[in-house]
Length: 358
Image (cartoon, rainbow, N blue to C red; front, side):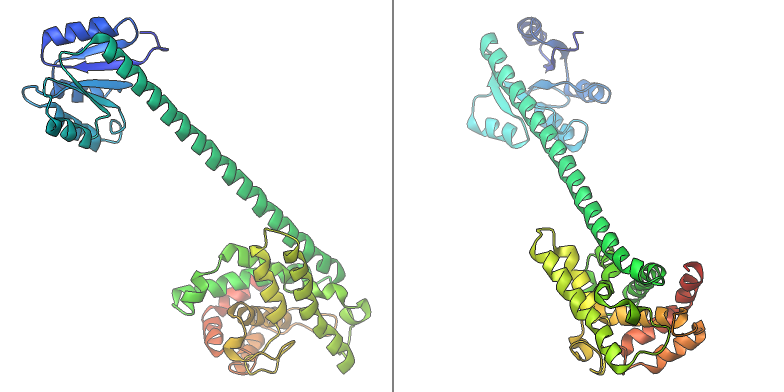
C-alpha cells in the first residue's frame, strides 16, 4: 500500500455494493472491503483506517450497533464514520448522526458525489489534527515559558538573599535551615488539619522560596551593628528593627515594576511580619494575634529557633532542648499557641535539620 494515501474501510454485506464502492475509491485511496460489522470490529483491533464507510442494514450486527461499540473504545472512538444506507427518512439519518457519524449518504450513491464527500471529510479531519498538534505545541511553549519564569523568580530570590549572606556570615545556613523548618511546620499543620483553609490557598513551593528574603532588609544595616560581637544598645536595636520595614519596601518596589509579582507577595509578608509577636509587643507594627499573617507567625518560630541553636558573634549556641523550652515558654506571648503545640510535635525534625545544615 502507498503510505501517502489515506485508508478507507468499506463495510457492507452486499457484494455488489462492495465491488462498486471499491472500484470508485481505489484510484484515490487504499480500500479494504469488509462484509460485516463483526468482522470490522475484529480488524479494528489491529488496523485503524482514516475513514469508514459503514452500511446500516446488515445481519448479525447493524451499523448503529457497530458504531456504538466503536465509540466505546479509545482507539476507534475518533475514527470518522460515514453511514451508507437505503433509508431516506430523517429519523434514521438523525439516529446515525447522534451516534457519532459525520455524514449520512443514501444508496444507490453517485461515485463522484461519494468521492467528494470523502475528500471533504478527510480534509476536515486533517485540519482537526493540525489544530490538535498546534494546541499541543502551544501548551509545550506555555510550559516552557512558565518554567523559564519560575527559574527567573528563583534566581531573583536567591540573588537577593545572597546580598544579605555576603553581609552576614551566618545567613546562608540560616536561610536554608529556615526553609526546611517551614516545610516541616506546614506539613505538620496539614496533617493535623490546622489552619488548613488558609494553607490550601498558598503556593507552598513559592512561599518556601520566598522565605529566602525574610531578612533581605538587613542590607541597609551598618556593618558595625550587624556584625557587633556584643549586646546591642537600645539605639542600635532600633536600627536593627528597620530591616523589616525596609525589606517590605524594597520588595514592594520590585512588585511595582514587574508583572510576575505573585511570588513576591509572599516575600513581602514574610519580611514585614516575622518579628511581630502574638501579644502585640513585636515590631514593626505591633500586630497582635491573628492580625499577624499566618506566614509571619510561622516564620517567627522558625527564625527564633534557628537563632537560638546557632552560634552568633554575640552569643554561644543554645542546645536544641533549651531552644524548645524557650519557644514553649513563649506560647501565647511571643508565639501563636496553636503553632507552638504543632512545633513541639515535630521539634525532633528541627534538631535533625539543624545538625545536618551548618
